[in-house]
Image 1 (tube, one colour):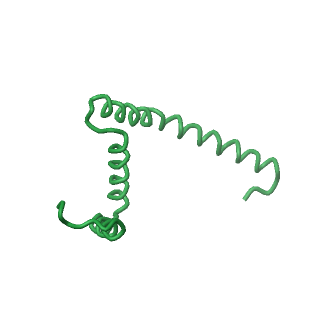
Image 2 (cartoon, rainbow, N blue to C red; image 1 turned 180 degrees about the horizontal axis):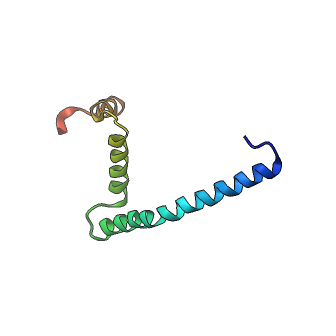
Image 3 (cartoon, rainbow, N blue to C red; image 1 turned 120 degrees about the vertical axis):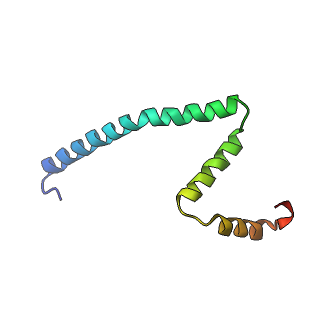
Length: 85
C-alpha cells in the first residue's frame, strides 16, 4: 500500500503505463474480431443477430455452462416444446 501521495502517484503512473501496453497489444486482436464479423456479414453467412447469438453461445460454453440446463430453462420460460428437436 502506498504510504505517501508521491508514492501513490508513482504507482498510478506505473499502472497506467502497464494498462496502455496491454491494451496496445490487444488492439490487433480486436481488429481481427471486427474484420471477422464484417466478413461473415458481407458474405451473407450470418446476420448481426446471429453473430451475437453465436458469441453468447461461445461464452456459455467457455464458462462451462451446461447447455442442456440452459435450454431446459429456456423452454420453461418460453413455453417451447420439443417438437422442433
